[in-house]
Image (cartoon, rainbow, N blue to C red; front, side, top):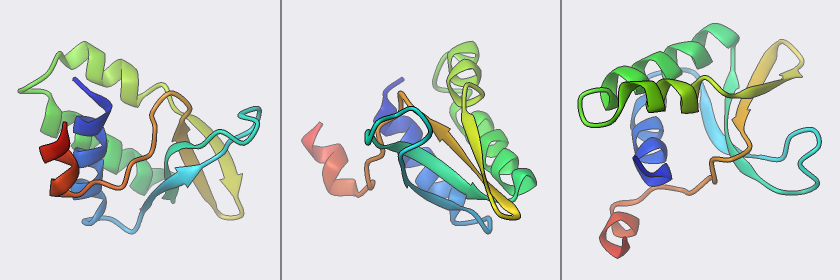
Length: 100
């Protein structure tokens, strides 16, 4: 499983929820950016759940779960941001896939 597969799937699924997929630099990341979800905790967890379900048939289930549940989180007022320091944020487009 590659980071592109995860970002591609998140990009597709996030459209169904009131959640944003974005670049984020969390605490202790010293200006480095990674992939993040922002929104309510419930909606962000729903996106993660649907992403796991979507990827489970084509990739190692335990690897997917370990990757997607190893997020960190920060408060954003009433919402949160869940982020993965090791998952580079890439805006997915079909042209990116062709280059890989």
